Amino acid sequence: MSKRISPYILALILTIPLSGTVASSQDMVIVSLKAEECSLTVESNDKWRTLRLRAHHPKYKGCHITREEMVLALEEAFLKTDPPRLEGTYSSLFIGRLIDYPWLSQYLATTAYHDRGWDSKRGKPAAMDINKYVSQLLFRKEWIAQIEGPFAKGGYRIIGVTVEKVPVGSFREVPLFEGKMSQGKVPYDAQVWLRLEKN
Image (cartoon, helix red, strand yellow):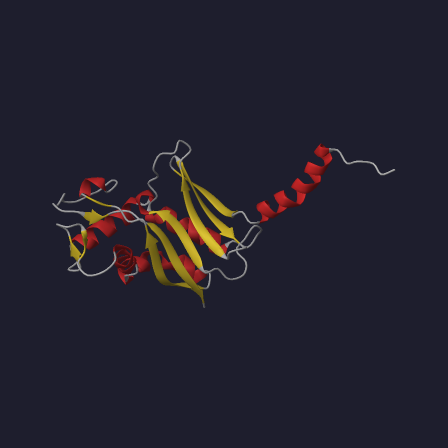
């Protein structure tokens, strides 16, 4: 006569392999730094071969990550030799929302305002989709040159920028904005991916 497996044991047997699969697909923290009240981490997802720069506030407020803090976190991640470390080839780095990087949010707003391809009265590009327009602004050498050092040290180069969810507003919307509060509407935020290529 065969013994029946209790529902509890059966559920436990079915759960163990499932939980292992979920855990293996999660992002792995490579480095974690303090940035005032926020933490700044570089994470890798080896299943999708992607990287993520995550700014996190413990009270769910916005972060104010400086360029120096951003570069330091990336440099520590790309140069790290002890586990966990970056291994293999990665295709992109997701940096999250620009408003967590006020200097970058300001760069986007002021660059668009002074660009002939942007209509500040209507708050939209003159001749293309806004995601494509902002992607092109953020792929300009003047900005890429400020952060490309850590990538080069890790054997990578930035070959493009992809964005989505671009809000438009006044300069008052730009976090920690320094400069003239000009009239008109500008893009000031987006979710941003840097596309990477290994040398």
